[in-house]
Image (cartoon, rainbow over all chains, first blue to last red; front, side, top):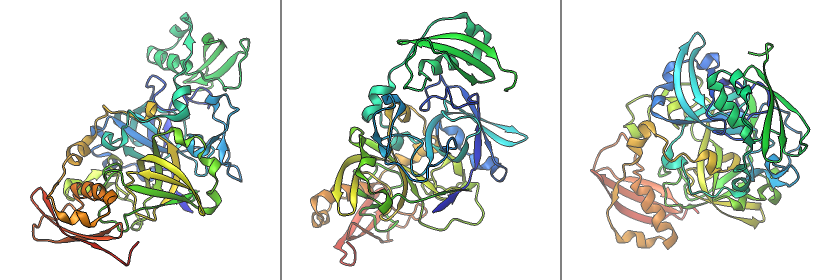
Length: 229
Length: 229
């Protein structure tokens, strides 16, 4: 057993699990901040990082408990939640070592009273998620655009049409594309298919309500949520 | 602190640290076996993995000791070993959490008396290295071919010319391309530049000796090493 410690955590608009895209880069590039824990607040640890367009985050699946016994198979939500796949053929959090891997866009470093803060876009991590490591993305060994993506290829391409609505005007402009993108990714738990059901979630200080009929998503409400940031 | 356990280890021709390519995919695709530790020898954990052409390995930098105090900067060997970069702008093993990340090609699963063994190509791990996790490579979120690769872009493109020699005929055919590729990657510690110095290393059951003059590498000896596999 090797103990690993948290070097940082992320802060962003995903205040709850509901609505977080199921992989990185799917939410229109909304902004996250990576705040280092006290022992790691050293700007020199980021020297040279500005030369990279993308970074890897290695993080902890802190949502949910690790079961006592590992399960060799999981039910990916994108397969409808019924079919079982081998855990090592999925990116499921329910794996022997709960380490997540996400590629994000580098968007700068700012100096704050909490030390250097790394700005990234496209993260699929809930706000507050602890981070183990940040690595540069090296295209010569990490980018394989012709790789075949197994069953994920077939299921991740599917998007919902979001019905146009003036409700988006209630949001600050920089949040509109992000919300549109994450709704198009179909944030429902995949085993629900009830056109009358109203789904609600909190995101970026707003409460969002919507319904889905066939492949179209209808936003019912966007309301500022004063209890949240 | 979160404890992580080893789920598997790798077995391949890299019996020593010397000669291991500095990233994955640079050694002409030589073969490695991933052998699961006893609690994880379950073929169903690999169900669906055959649909993927590439996999991620998350592994432990088990070579060398973790220093008591972390260093925010490191000296990448490819920059000559003198210039310091921020640790999070490098893939150096000398990082707060010693987790390595490598993309490998999937080459099949075989059933053995040690359970299911995963065959992969292009790994940059020393034989025996423990593994924390295996994940499928998802091109839609992991492949960013137009990403910019910072200082690594400039230094990883450089290769040596390997002078033609009959000595390669001493190797089994399937090992020749692999050795040629890893020699072209310049396995010397970068701060050495002495044309008379003979470098020696063990690899795949052979002892290899070579010299380097300017940008050309000259193989002096390839000898079966009976002490090794």
